[in-house]
Length: 516
Image (cartoon, rainbow, N blue to C red):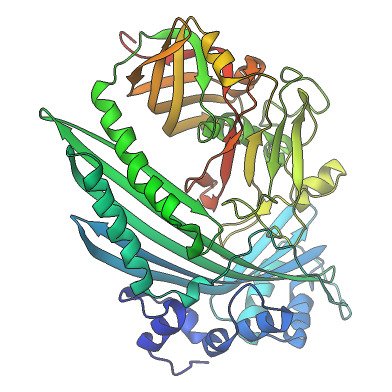
């Protein structure tokens, strides 16, 4: 069915007048009128989600009949409507703006640990039945199912906001970019360029399973990223800072706008005085907050259950065994209020939780989706995630962080005779099985005789995640959650995540510096 709706009307309805060229996919042939006339915001109920996607329980029952007709064990139907808006400022002017909208449904059938999956951008009875038939091909038999009793499940609300992004016009966003730009240039005369991105995204998710679970989620996201270039005596440096979270525009307070202007300038101009340390194995202190990326990449991925179920991860035989000192505890948590990686439900409809991966040095759990939890005979941890309705579910991290320890930051730094203090990271590479990693340290400091001295830049740290976990010898009580816009990639899918860390001392990591 083709609905008569103009591109301009669609843009207005989806982004409140964003003056941009939008990507308009094939879902214009689906039930878009229902989607655009549906309620928006975090106060929606189940009937609002049915209206948004133009579906009825009868249509859902028909899809289940087709999906399980060849003997599948389980089916879920995942509807998603995502609206993303982007505004960019460069050379002191707003010169880029666009929208990206996706709308569709994914149908998954499981037979044992095998997955059949299909999706369609047309939410019509015929299109969904065809997708269900494709997903059903994972099984080879026949099966008749009766009506499934659908039991609505109201999710938690870990990311309340005051104003839906759909109610914020472009004219309300542009002043934030202009204000930050003016403040950046006023902060330091060496600044020669600033790039600023304002991104907001809203996803509406409706999920129904053949076990009768019916649930939904409204997922907001906001982000401002600021990149700064500065010049001194013919030498140029660049650095950045961003803030992101499952928040509305009220997140961008005067205090946060001030940070978005000052912090990237501070990071950038500090690089003019930066040096490279001598190469070699040395003590490394990981700064509280965003250096948790090393924890996420080098250790967290190895605790995702699919890697362990398949025997790929070095942690595959480590459950209930010591993997770190007793003062080291690591969690993966979807319940942190308004944090980027938080979820009210996972993408299988499970309630989310705070999962202890390492508790007092002992490996306690992996991150499980439906398939791995059945394999291990445990409950799902609410870690089944997918990039969109176009992708299958995988066990994924959410907000991964280390809990505070018994030490003080000052105590940790003063204990280091010669080492580095790593503050921000980029461009990491990790081999999941063994846990070997290389990370590029964007900024930090030398530690000499127990004191932070010269800034450092352009160095790598090289090591093994599980070994680094064992080599953590001090953990401070100054835990911070990273606030940036991290997106985690796995098997071609990207999902929003966050991470955190107290100040941590690792007894030895190889540093690639001078003469490396």
